[in-house]
Image (cartoon, rainbow, N blue to C red; front, side, top):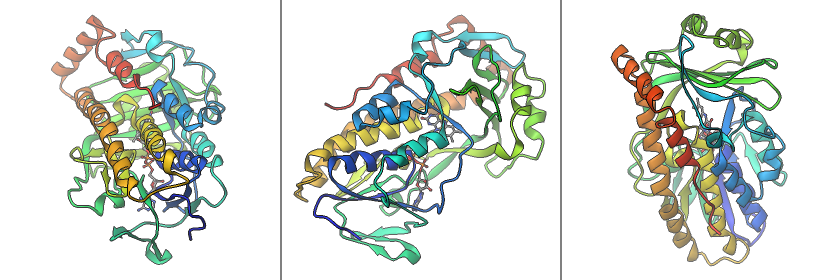
Length: 383
Ligand SMILES: Cc1cc2nc3c(=O)[nH]c(=O)nc-3n(C[C@H](O)[C@H](O)[C@H](O)COP(=O)(O)OP(=O)(O)OC[C@H]3O[C@@H](n4cnc5c(N)ncnc54)[C@H](O)[C@@H]3O)c2cc1C
């Protein structure tokens, strides 16, 4: 399978993290193979927030221009803030907090990252079953050996992570989310999040005027929503929430239980293997940072491996990956903790708590979420 004597990198998972690592290392001269279980890349039907730190990582990877081509020129042109279900305004974020926010259709982002790779880099329809003594078990597709570096970018249920002792596995957060993009443009006068009692609804425009929205509901982990539940739950919420739901074709709406890594990992690297993105630090999407942090992981990993991408000494690799772990674990685990705590707090269904939260948001509008959004964005790639 391998063709060159450059650094040979096997990446498991063609999500945002895996594709970003692959393109950075390929550009640096490494030979890269990406193994992806999905046979085809289907449209995702949802949006994604990219922030200043995500763009800094893309710049460091040489991918910024390609991604900027599929996102809006500027931040959402309408104010972003928080409201109550009846429409009462709780806060408006400072424009500077979101100056770098761009919302992208996930399918467009994925396509942009894929286009940067040499043909045949991604091998679709190959599921990695496990890793044993340096050999990747590819199920019916056979075995993969002789790689120098293995990157587990295979998401929250990572098989690469699971091949090592101490995998904490995934934990359900106690809520699930519907996501959708309206079929066509919708005129908005604001954007942001609306809080109910245990429910939340967020909406933000895409570059072409379509609107990406999400709706969160508390639920038991095995509780799938009934048909019609979404419309019924948000029927009496303020405008434009009911009309955004009406403007989205039901088949373009997806529902997903929200999960996180059950416990923080003790390390993101073991010998010649490292984890990136959700495989390393899956978190609830409260701060919209999961994919941004996967891009940061990729930028740090690529900057550490770049010097040995063409001429490598295998003895260098574990040291480089240990440096990656040291650089990434504190920041990503701190943001994951904040996202979990904030997510849990926003979901609390009791009226007393909801009133306290609303008062806090009103009294200090920029205090809670605004500060968290700002601090998560403060990051610079390594030189
Ligand atoms: C409701 C919701 C909203 C979100 N909103 C945002 C947001 O606005 N901004 C943001 O930054 N983040 C957001 N996130 C988080 C973001 O989606 C993730 O953090 C990000 O997608 C992680 O990327 P990844 O590449 O690490 O993993 P994934 O996107 O999970 O990709 C993993 C890939 O690996 C493949 N794979 C898995 N197992 C195997 C295997 N055994 N063999 C081969 N291939 C395998 C999968 O098919 C997949 O293609 C949101 C998440 C949710 C649930």
